[in-house]
Length: 454
Image (cartoon, rainbow, N blue to C red; front, side, top):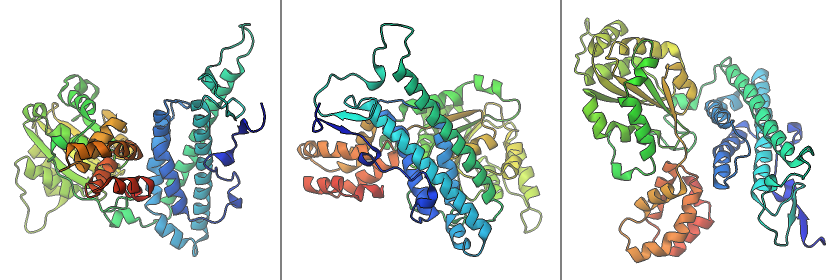
């Protein structure tokens, strides 16, 4: 076959990988590197799902853990980058962080390349693209030789690739965990601690409540049923040695953790099962006194103080007596605190409630769920493209005629794919498109970077 019919797939024909030697990279701020890595981590699993390829199995939890750890580090990078010019140890810490960021970037690039090679039937095992039509035979499903004892090289190559990528990710995760532990030695001030800002979207987080319009919820019926079965099941009590069972909803920002909790909270079966339902928005400032007082008021107790000052002793005793034997559902929404010293006193009081009571915690960080002593973790997954499309049109097609909606459908479905299964992205993009009148306006959004604001 001549050179015009075949071209070699090289790293230069794909998204460019990082230089394996970080010292050869042009200087980049650690915050920019971490943001870039977070974006890649958020899309890598989705890419496998979209292309119906499962090249590396069993590392999804490692990927989620990496994302969570990078988010935690990202919150203190502004302070770290300012202090590096005065403190050599901080500068070294940032250098090590950059090394890890470059290394994970390289591994994810290798993963992306492997997905492309496996999903494209016209690319052979040596990375060569055949421009001429070929039968659609998967690269990694070639028939082995007739001699059953002959080595099936492609199979061994595939297994080796899976193992290599998985091993690299686990090794990088260990290094990043060490860097995350070391950051505590510097006493960095995190913007996340002083400002109620969502670092993934740059938006100010608004306080949530238990109320939700169920007509605005799409693609979460299965998740709701699983959660409700855990709430109503008597069997889940058996795994709890002492106290009230704790169920965690875990997922990255924009996945719809709060929406799922609201969906469950307002289900008629849940309303009829629990004598008292309570919703508390926690966020990054975990104030145990405030949380305790909220529970006491919700459950019908009174705050009795000795004099004008409210002490933790007063609140703690009243919380314990208020929940004694009560059958309640408590939602703690958006929990970030990883310090068991903050949570344990509350858990001590809450375990005096009825064994039929339940606590639901929503968090981005599975370490938070583990620290709180969860009995079940519900890892929220991305929505299907069809669910994203339904959610997007729910907002974008308000007030439009059916004929107009049909004309916008093809472009809209392409935009829905860009939401990458994130409900918040679909909702935000749909709200934006509601004010885009013409097909040309929608086409402009599709071709521009406007959609990235979601």
